[in-house]
Length: 157
Image 1 (tube, one colour):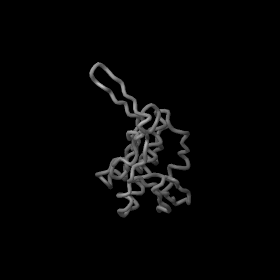
Image 2 (tube, helix red, strand yellow):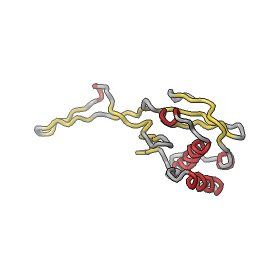
Image 3 (cartoon, one colour):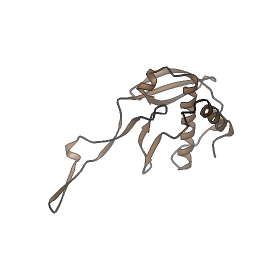
């Protein structure tokens, strides 16, 4: 299934109002795993792959006069990662993420709507590449963000 027409229309409205914003995907996938997440508002990296600091996992290979160091990567939440819990007009909730800097600045209704539409767009992208669960568009398409009810930098909302 593709994005419902109601969602496409909402995307057009927000992109027309906020000409510097284009509703986009914000996850980077590799081998069916998320390897990076960007903030939906400013596009800064909020999660990603970093080199492991465990010396026991580092491999060294000698090739002629050269030593090759193979350092495994691990997925990490960066210091600027934040989760927010959005309450909608129908009193349902949705948890998503942003960077701390964007969350510190006042988030307008349009920005909250933009964040939610980016999530809906990402759900559709994930579905098309076979990496998402079944999408309940009937529930998601008409919800209007009302307010942020909770925040966490620990990823536990």
